Amino acid sequence: MRHGKTEWNLESRYQGAGGDSPLLSESYNEMALLSKHFETVTFSHVYASPIKRARITAERIDRKLKGHPKISLFSRLEEFHLGKMEGMKFDDVKHQYPDQFENFRNHPDRYDPTAIGGESYLDVIKRMTPAIDVIVRNNPEDNVMVVSHGAALNAEINYLLGAKLADLRKRGGLANTSTTILDSQDGGRAFSLVKWNDTSYLNKQLDETDLV
Image 1 (cartoon, rainbow, N blue to C red):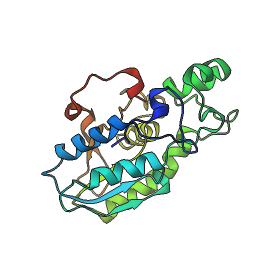
Image 2: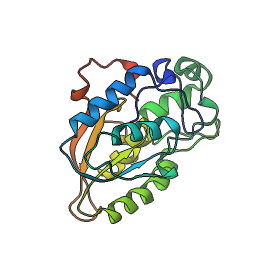
Image 3: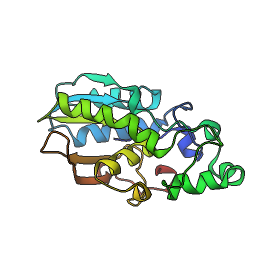
Image 4: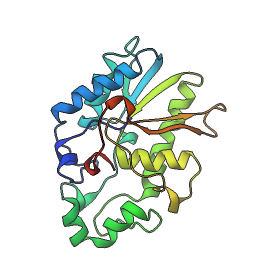
């Protein structure tokens, strides 16, 4: 799951791992709808990024899940570190750092964050994958929920599905409070996609500020 929508999401600002902003009031209703959607599913564990917007999302969802599974916070599940772009509006980044703006969104294989002091796609994948390995190893046959961030989840999920670096963004963005379901039958050596970016339970029309 991607965390609920925040003020900076609405304002089209980059948050990253170092930035954060309050969740919108409407996001709490959407978290409740997500919980209701999964009310008959048993989860053995919830794992979340410790960044406030993701942690609160996980806690709110967990309140209404069957059995209220334990929540563990993994720093490896944090959003991209975006350096100088954090807190900036998308249009301002496009003007000041045009190459980083274009490549971060559309060309992961060309994205070089050196000028902004951030993480590359490979950096994020290398730190997130060990966390996924631990999660699968600890829950080999159970359903688990992972609550994290749009760009980081997008990169890691597509990597787990075998996408090449250049193709990590080909499926499009992930919406706030969306669900993507992966399945593994071999202990995490291979994953298959069950559902991508599901928001059917939110009963609303998405706009561009919902997607990353």
